[in-house]
Length: 552
Ligand code: SF4
Ligand code: SF3
Image (cartoon, rainbow, N blue to C red; front, side):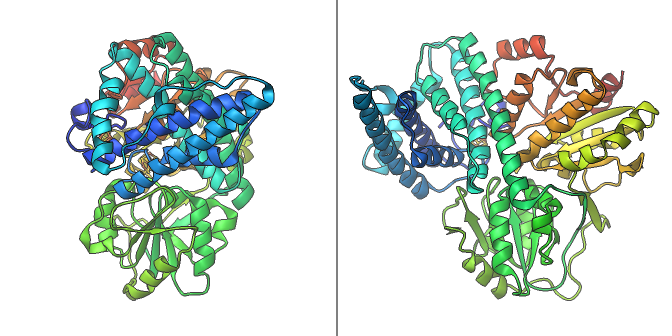
């Protein structure tokens, strides 16, 4: 196997025998083959679309299947093999669509080669053999390492886009143009002879596409659940039966809340589900009782201690410990061998497991550190609602600088940088944060500034669009560009959605960003030098040094 798609890749170079995330060679090979098959779907779907033919099922399958290959989503070989078979059926459907459209247009359809012509082996061993001997050498031992790296950059960006698009689609929101671009980009990646310049342009185009898809997701969330409002979230747990919901899928959480109403079960958020408490239509459920635990990286200990059922609605799942394997469930594209999977939002097995488990005893559970509640819900609607206050505070000198410290958490050391940075930011500066990296500091007391909390939680990584709207509105208010604002962006990356977000920021021309804790292994020194030159994109150093530079 060879995988270097995430930040914790082995030795910062690539996982070659087993993934640091727990992905084994079989799973890695099957995910690679699934992507190969999806490129085949795209080859035909793109051609069909050029002739005006589209198919909603082909589009939906494409993004959902890509989602299964993101870091910490799907570790189940059986489900991945089934997805490969469905991908081949979908590719054949895409080919038939293209052929019909060609005939209607009076064109002779072409027989497409490459991934579009791939015939998967009938057995698992055969599939692994195809991956080892046919796919891997082509992917990573290409003539130019730089080209291979850039192709992977574009692919990882598309993976992030697909995940966001899948979340939006779950809420019934989609955009034909987004599907068109996803297919077009994957088709483009089937051409080995592309140049570095073409691939860089494609990467920035993925950033543009991601901006559009994040906007669709933002609108889907707010249409379904209302605009987030600042809301206090109880930390810890009440006595009684309990379900813990992790991951990003608000649609699943909503269905679970409906199905548990009146059953005496308290529902708690974990990890990226925390921002759910800000949505009017979710917080209206009285049994959405609070937040338990922190980021995905702490799940082994936290899930072990949780005396109820646990639901993983999206990334990031880690190998479940035996102690809780019988009471953890997956939904959507998440899967782990031996873990029960919820299909079609029928959460009755989760509810049964919660009722069977002991639940919290009469004293409940208090968060370590003594903090009893935190505030979330500072999406763009809420922040722009107090924009006047913010602008006044800047003009009066009460707010000197804005920091956006956002992105993923990760299991490797070196992420204390983000805690140190947040803690050392001067009191006359406001901090915006989003995504699961914030658990490094979001339970600290940052106090207030100009009547506003100094730490504003914008939401999940899925809410990056919201953070960008805030930055753009501030730039509008001060009649300048985002790069001219007293704003510094410090990003923490881990998986492929963060890659898509980075590409969006670069597409928007955002300069002077800092990224860490380590640089992506799939960006060669040449590409990094180019990004530094063009966007002044920098690696983080120390909190002290970076803070001084950002405030200078
Ligand atoms: Fe390694 Fe990350 Fe790939 Fe897992 S997803 S195998 S940790 S690079
Ligand atoms: Fe986190 Fe997995 Fe990226 Fe949504 S939950 S930000 S890492």
